[in-house]
Image (cartoon, rainbow, N blue to C red; front, top):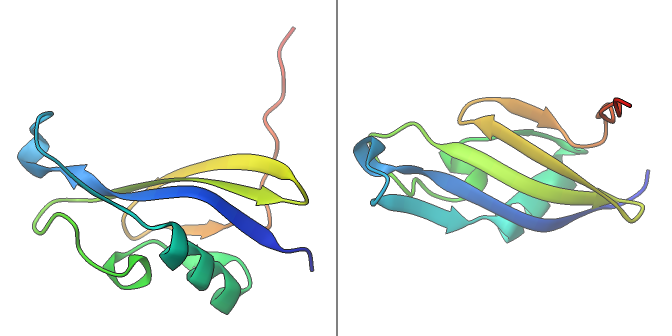
Length: 94
């Protein structure tokens, strides 16, 4: 199986929905460790991301991950699973 490389990953929330109160952390290393340990299927939560950056708020996740040099963007809400090895490329409309 080809290696996945995490280029960027962030996890957090806007505290209380306040646009001026960002509580987010860089989770690049945590995501790389989780991908390596789970063959690419990761549940995005406080445990796998290493901590709770915004207690009491629903967190969101975003990442850029490369497989064989091709980068793909991912996003989800806390508690969802992402299978980083299987994604469907978006179709281009003409």
